[in-house]
Length: 199
Image 1 (tube, helix red, strand yellow):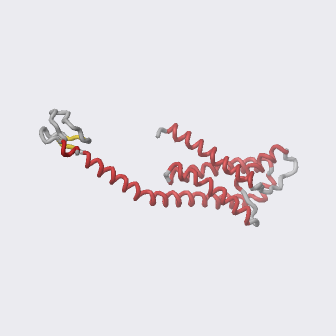
Image 2 (image 1 turned 45 degrees about the horizontal axis):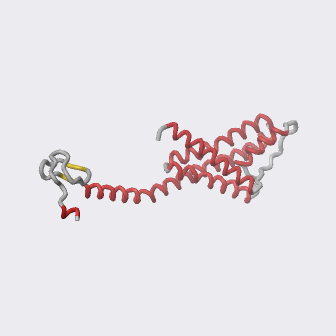
Image 3 (image 1 turned 60 degrees about the horizontal axis):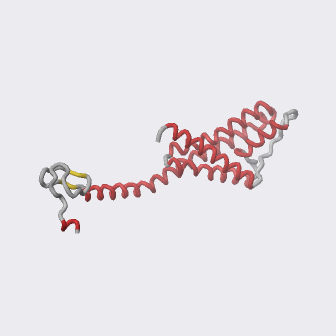
């Protein structure tokens, strides 16, 4: 797979993850409560609130905590199964997690500084813990799946090797080897497979 295909696959993965997150937020009508500074415009409030719903939860609300962790667990499964590689899986999940966090903190700092400074420690703690959870979940499940798949892949490889050895043919007249069972030698034109063998 070339770099362009991998890039396109990552973009598609990113879009799918955000669509699933958006669908979950809509279906469960989830909303993180923010006390905005006075003077902030309605459009900016909507943007910041929209991004916050993807990543934050009320510290004292166990339901919100479960929802956010459940949502990110679901979307983290996508790159784990698509890429079948623990490095690509956790880097893709971290990339997806990074984007809403980056824009949320930048916009909040710029347009609602009082709230940002008052709650920054609580918010960043939640972000770091969720980020660590995503990394460990991605790594753990990817490595577990790799361990489960490995014996199956090895068995398949051995079966293919056995089939290859069965179909190998050597001409008794000139000694040339074939990776098939031809009726005649392409080198000396002598017959290789007798009627008995065919039967």
